[in-house]
Length: 207
Image 1: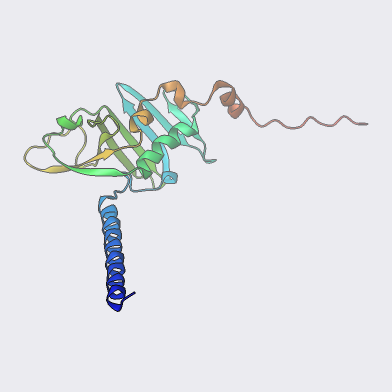
Image 2: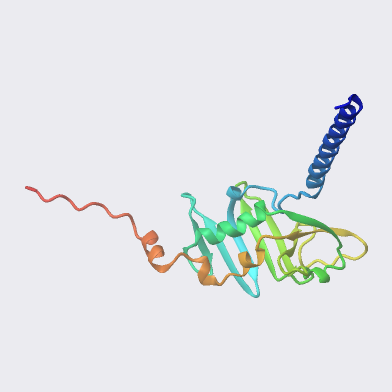
């Protein structure tokens, strides 16, 4: 092979490697640019109480000292841990896409009159509240607005002030709309949890 051919081959390989490296860097930068954090700025394990208000119904849960969840409203029953974990995982781990919205025009997002509100009490006794609005056009995500003391759900804000609205995916609808009975441990399991620990029968003398 002639020397000029070798030179062209080396140049082609070098250019090809450079293009691959450039595209790889662009892909990484694009991924970092589109990566979003979860809407809840805390770990799932930090949640001690959960309160859901939806369609005139309120359901509430509290974690006991053993780390087990119990429903406190509308019933006093052991809660289904998987149902609560499912919802908390979405809030603390699923990506949330931020959207700029005018505070006076939340109706397109279903947030002027939210379908549900969530209140989470943490281990430090602080409370984090969210308003849940409509689904997006795909039907797979919900518009969610964090609520603060300065911007409660029923406050009308005039002017061009913007508020934080997020698009949360990952089955949030299923997480908050499940029927009441699905939040509870099955009857047989609940009875077992509510029963005090049994003690072994005293051994009969002579056995």
